[in-house]
Length: 147
Image (cartoon, rainbow, N blue to C red; front, side, top):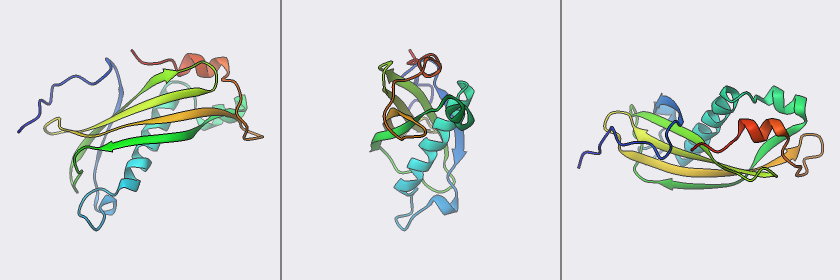
C-alpha cells in the first residue's frame, strides 16, 4: 500500500532536514541501526535549536542547558541503505519551569511512509553544577511549543 506523500505533518511548520541512509548507518540486520536514530534526532535537535537562536555557545554564555531525561521511540518501518528520509522536529511542550518535550517524525522522502516517531523529554540544568535549574527567559521564548 502506498502512503500519501502529501499527508500533513503533525504540526503546521516543523523543522525538517533530509538525509540519506549510508552504508555505515546499516547494521547486521540490513537496516539503519537503532543507535543511528539517536544520532539523527540529536543532530536535528541541535540544528533546530540553532535556528531558534540557541547554540551550545549560547547555553554556555547563559549558564543553562537542556539535557535528555527520557527518549521514547517507535520504530514504525525499517530505513534501508540509500533511503532518503525527511526528519522533522518541533517543540511539543514546554512547562516554562524545567521541562520541555521535543517531538520527531521520520518519513520516506519518496512515498511519505512514516518510518519513525519519537519524543525526547529534556530538563534544564545549571551548566556548572549539573543540577536542575529554572528555565531562563531565553529558553521559554525560543522553545515555545509549535502549534
